[in-house]
Length: 86
Image 1 (spheres, rainbow, N blue to C red):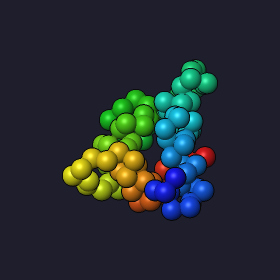
Image 2: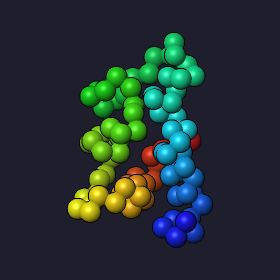
Image 3: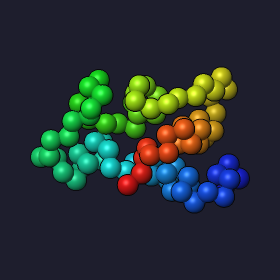
């Protein structure tokens, strides 16, 4: 909790990211398997968390040489405040 800087929205975004309870293709495929789910980036047929977080050029990234995943996630969400939200 100390890493979230008392931010309820940051905590909510991290919870959605970790639990995969966010409206991206990976999640929607479970509940709407017949719906056409195309990812605008074009490198994958559906949005998946790993690609969004690590590779997608549509999102800002930060470099962390220590690869501390929790800090990476927090930094990513601060740089991309509209990601992993409803």
